[in-house]
Amino acid sequence: MGAREGRVAGAIPPDLPRAERLRRILDRDGHECVWCRLPLEPGDRALSVDHVVPRLKGGPAWAENEVAACRPCNRARGHRSPAEWLRERPQANRDAILRALTGLRDAIAQRGGQG
Image: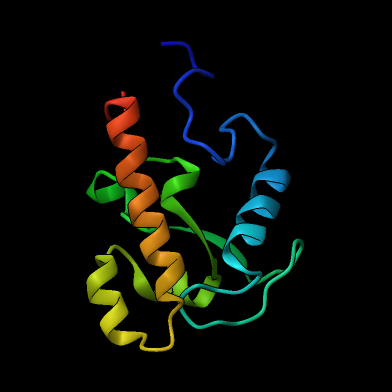
């Protein structure tokens, strides 16, 4: 299967320039940090991308595993699991986290893993 075949519907293409990828992630996640709801816009110094399933724990560098987060939340979360971090962040955008986890599950099923 080619790189463009089997792409998840509505997926953010992996070959986008970083700025465009960040803009699309912000659009998808509602222009706020998914963990604390701080408003975020392209170019904000506080803007970062957080991997819902941490890379250190096997999470891929796919847009399905990336959410908009402010740098303080991203730094404070470290490599904690989404479930653990959600317990500490009751204000989190649970819909965005669930969407990311579901999208990641579907992408892994379709692509067959990270390889």
